Length: 245
Ligand code: NAP
Image 1 (cartoon, helix red, strand yellow):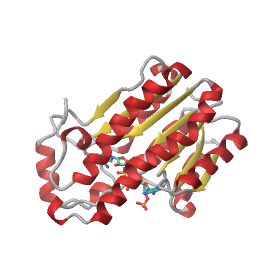
Image 2 (cartoon, rainbow, N blue to C red):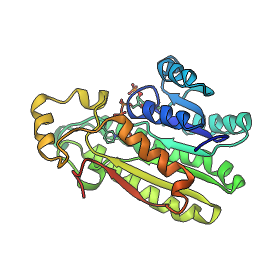
Image 3 (cartoon, rainbow, N blue to C red):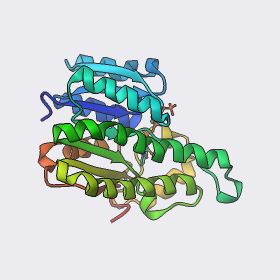
């Protein structure tokens, strides 16, 4: 599916980002994986190498505009192309608005929304020259429905959805496709910290009556990044077990 293609995945040390990197690699892509600390990427890199694919690890904070621009330029000149970008890095700092600090608001918006802006801007010049490229942003159903205690997170993910649609319109004429996925409850470190009560009540709200796993998200991301989705841009696909229809 991705033979000869170069892909970048942010926040790939674990969870959904790790599964996306592994799926793209298993389908033939050469991968650059990024996270806050290079050493955290060792597990993902080892699994990709085991699958017989080339992988490069990069230490990158997606909130750093300058570092993102120069690193992605370096990747483009080293690898010759950037065909796929997956904007996966994301954080939560949950709390009711009355108790939410400015720092928690700023941190979530900086990683989840500005990070997507930084990385997208950093690849578009290369993709424009190529007259081809696919970007997949990891949003959330919370960006569609909202959620008490997640005003910062929901605002960031709603922003990612609107950003995806706007940028899809800007770059469609250059054959650059930009789509998003909106996962529901996916088991990962981000969701492991939730109490049993919260997990039970969420399960009640999922028509398929089970939580998703990172591989469920990865397969849809690979589809959107592939030529199988050649006529899809500006789309948001929910991966929520029917939680949002
Ligand atoms: P995760 O296990 O916390 O993984 C996120 C990765 O991103 C971590 O390795 C994290 O590093 C890294 N990261 C955080 N800030 C970064 C930064 N500034 N620059 C680069 N990397 C950074 O989360 P996940 O559950 O796999 O979530 C992945 C994406 O899916 C996120 O965008 C999340 O919002 C979205 N999502 C998740 C769910 C779910 O149910 N899990 C549902 C909907 C959407 P640290 O170890 O330092 O945090």
